[in-house]
Image (cartoon, rainbow, N blue to C red; front, side, top):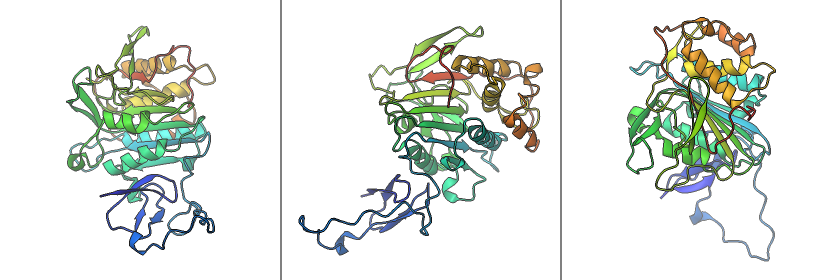
Length: 366
């Protein structure tokens, strides 16, 4: 039977295999040692000396843990996942670029500390930061653990998404939406119910999470209760996607807003048509462009969503030419050119949330 212990470095819950006396954390690499209960000394007398204080957060060689404690009040942190599935029949060209650009924007525009951003890509040398199913699960757990009022969290995913049959009856269309880790063919996909349990349900009052999901079939991949159904003129209504079973899919008082690349029955493009420099996910490029072009003006969730949709509809026209001239566009021009696309894009970015709100009145902020 597995025993659950807290990592000595970042306090992430770890499953200790039977008989093991130590385990290395996949997130901060700290080694946590567990005494063999058969060799443990008898418990101290309740009237004896106080037990020693726990050791400080350190890495495997005594150095400070590379990631900050998730209990820090008001801290911004993010998990960014970009999967190219290189050397496979599923290969994508733009996902690594998406991850790099998202990290660049979070650091330079929204002042996220670089040390508080976990990157999961195939370029990472750390085996625990390869975007496998196990590592993605661990990173999602780290993102929300110990969250407190004032925390601003971001989860960005660029890769394949899919659907599978839903057997619980809590999906309007009868399909569960999924994300595809690098090893999904052997380990399976991550289903929207699990994503909701990991990222949405734990969030308490005062905590804010933004998810940016650039994948096929991603409209409701966080299983949030409400979807903003917007037409081409920008008029919208909130659709109620709460399960008929009555299961609550919202937070524990926090706020979650998700931008996704397309509706549940649509696919998301991996293309060079938008940047005209290199391959990117269409949704990620348009999201960054919408934020950058807003400049110093008042940016709302509605203005971001409408700008993204307009840019995708205008592929092949002048709307895709050039960026806002800011740091993110500068980064895009530095990337190595590659990939190509043809024809127009037929996808509509979606906005879902744990509660309805006025999308044209609520200011966008990370």
